[in-house]
Length: 440
Image 1 (cartoon, rainbow, N blue to C red):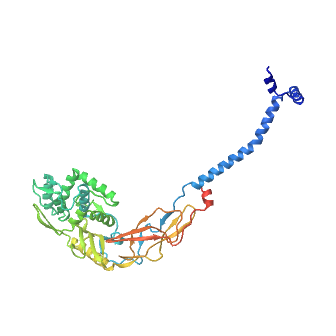
Image 2 (cartoon, rainbow, N blue to C red):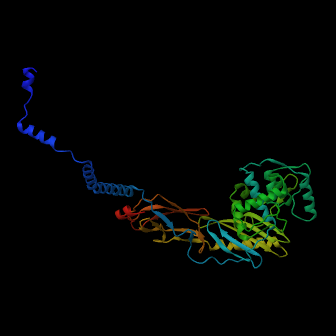
Image 3 (cartoon, rainbow, N blue to C red):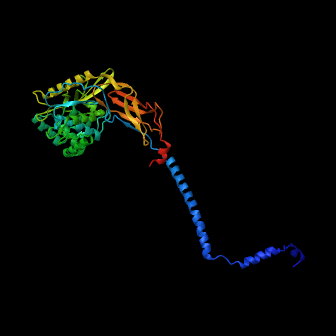
């Protein structure tokens, strides 16, 4: 060992040497003692770990509860059945026999007279026949549609109908009509043979077409209507006043149908000029729809009338059935005219919503709620009628100030279209901290 190395090594003191000697003499701890000490330290650390874990879970739950999406407030209308105008329904001159009903388009029913059970409807069935054909083969304004060859069985049906003094349209073997002409013969002339022609052309056979008519009746909600033939000649083809009004409204919504039933006369290739049996056309606002008359059904009339009252267009749809007189068709037309005259005479401007009228509430999941009012408005209508309303409500925030605009009520009646503003007359409070943290 050189002198530099010897010089760099530090000499231990006598005390250090003594301690090293004592350390060698003390035996190491036994393993069971070491394990016991470790177990004791672990037991001392468990409460600290559990406390930390609980705190972490609580913090996580609070965060989840706080940042969970809050359910939006919901508007609940108190006018689910529509707005009923103040006052009693007008007193109308209902026919003394048979049955009848009258409705204002967009404003519900004036009521009915006579039985509401299903009865034979004669040629009113042709309204459904035309509706099905036009839904399957729509006609645009000015178009006449495809050509339809008149088959031998339709010619035979025409001859048999004439012999039985039924309503028929003159046809000849080999004749061709377009869709528009056949429909005009059906609706204006009321021809039974045109019902057969159109049904066979549309569905391939009369029986298949009758099935389509029944299916269309179900789709329209005509639950009491049953169809056995496309012309209504069979007394087993039945309906009710309420069903027929609904059918009339659906058919008049088709522009081609509405145009045809408003025609006082038509000129067809073989039959020549044919006049509409609806003698009410052009008077007192009548614009259609269809008359009917046979032994089983009596005189019938499904009608649509439109008039302006105080500058606003109003529409009435009604039906008269079962007029058994010496002039059944004239009796049905006269009864309808009396109803329409009286109803239009009773129409006038009236309040739709009064100031401060509550039309619903905004409710929340946390228990807050606030009433909703609609802006006051007037409408030309009839007292006692229930007017349909269509609600358009915006997506609502969790709290609303006083006077908040939340949406509109749309009301359509004839040519009148009103939008009533919906507001909250008082504020809506948002969720509390306690609710946000304790909600399930």
